[in-house]
Image 1 (tube, rainbow, N blue to C red):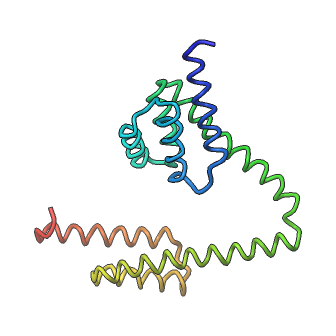
Image 2: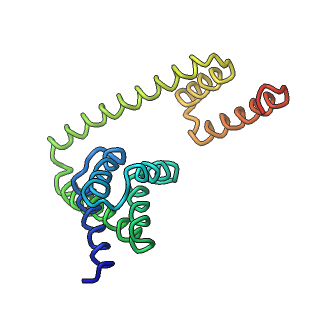
Image 3: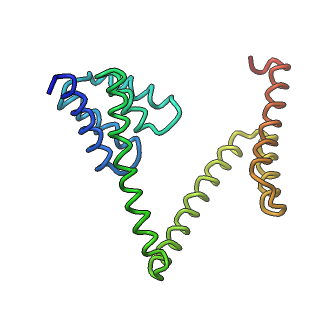
Length: 189
């Protein structure tokens, strides 16, 4: 095996293994990549790895995939980026395919239904927590227009079931007008 193929194979194996056994999202996978590619293989300096992660954070898409592609490209160019993308993508694809088959086989089970109902309650609690945090941030700002938009959106969504897209458009238009007025007054540049 040539050195280039060995590097590509190592990139694939490393990203596959990291993606397969890491739970918790992209911010968990980055330290694992740092340990593997900086400490164990010595292919990337730690400072450079932090730069790659910063770029990966600013790009659209999942940070784990972006960081993986950045590392692969840095180590082995375009083929490296392709190989690390595949290595990062395959484990979740395999796991979700298996989970889907298992879920289809057991979804009518009463106990599974109870677990799903409990998960719905947990998700509702998480969403409520996010909503309260966001509302508290808006109220803390003290901008009366933003508070009115918040309350109006809440009332329209609850009592009139207005589609969220219309509420977002309304908020965007009001935000645009508010920003335009502040620019005209010289409050912001």
